[in-house]
Image 1 (cartoon, helix red, strand yellow):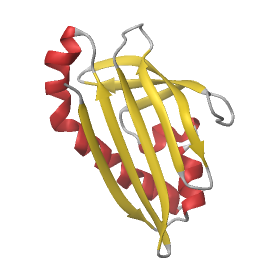
Image 2 (tube, rainbow, N blue to C red):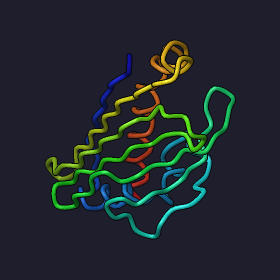
Image 3 (spheres, one colour):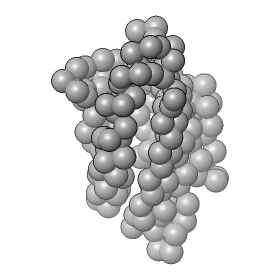
Length: 149
């Protein structure tokens, strides 16, 4: 009983600029409101790179760890797996595609939430579902604004 959702947005910035921001963990708090801080990250991502961020949602804060699964600059494809840094086996697979679209870019983000523990599978996923799409749409709008400057 996971959740899969996807959102897309046209942005005026070039695909290279957008991809550069999406793949820079240090810039995440500037365009994702749920991320309050970057705990640790490499200067540049490569396949297998890991970074940690601090998230805030539902009145709680926690550290989440992500690992790069796909990083293909030429095709604009970036994917990673994230999960809380507390040993919980539940995870989310995030997939980004940044494509040329006229004078700018079309950015599509897809997430597959995979709750595996009882509470996450039967309670938290039901709470998370209604707000997930809005958070994705808001992040894309903020990303578009961040790449315009």
